[in-house]
Image: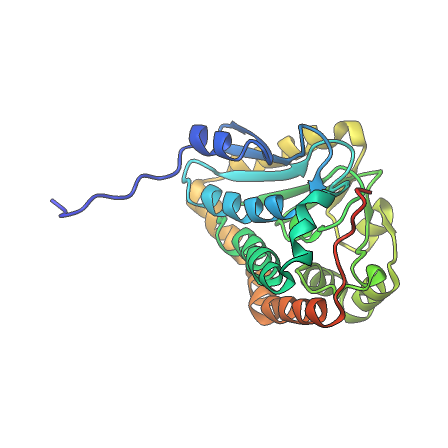
Length: 268
């Protein structure tokens, strides 16, 4: 008999309650629906959610009862805007904020999605928004016919180094990604399909039904085969993250401290 015991795995009933301020969670037959929200509706981005995403991903990845994950957002947007009150502290101590809330939490957020959730992931984009790397780095990605894919970092004089650069360069190639990142190209749903940013475009009112259908097809496969196949298709993302995520975040945070751009104080 072993001298020690296994640490208990996370329980869905406990962590769905713990993260309820940031995520609406549902699980059916091992398929976990993780829906970002703010007050039950469209997502307003802030440092609190930024941190919670990585924490939730690590917890979900530690629960062996999860077999497929659907990641989406409540409302009609992927992310609808910013919670301006979340960023008030950056004026007082930008160096602390750049490390604690952006560099550390941001790296953990992307790393945990790619490296710690060892089950198939489906990103579901209901409409326009930013921080699309979270959906694009899922194993499969579908979007509504109202979705717009773009990145606003450089347009607002930020370095696009927090994961969206990795997603666009991996999926679009160097030249096209440079254009999208530097010229603020607005990619509609059909062009996103043409560019292979997404796997399918689905009518808005059919989007979640299609997501569950895909998830159920994945979940029907044998458990170990499904999990190991996921690691094969995810290898390019693992390599991309290892090669340039930290460098991207470092460049973004250097420019943040040198040129002093700040998060928007509006909520649009």
